[in-house]
Amino acid sequence: MHRELPEVIVASMRTVIPDYNSLFDIVPPMGREMERLGCVCDIPEYCFNIE
Image (cartoon, rainbow, N blue to C red; front, side):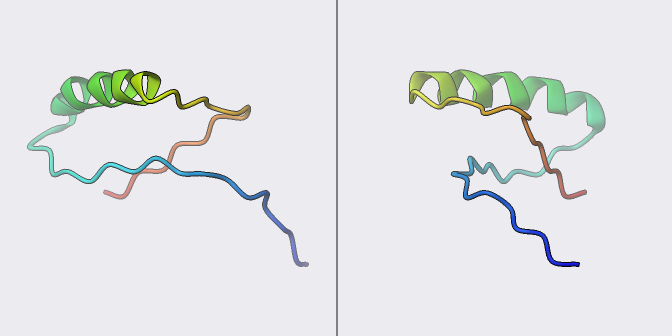
C-alpha cells in the first residue's frame, strides 16, 4: 500500500540534553521563537524526537 503525505514546512532544532528534565528548559524557548517568527501549527500537530 502506498500512502502520500501532505507537503509541510518543518521547524527543526538539534541539541544534546544531559537528562530528560532538561527538555523542559529547551522546548518552551523553541515554542516562543516559533511564535515570534509567525509559525502556525496545523492540526494534527506532529512532533518527532530522535533519542
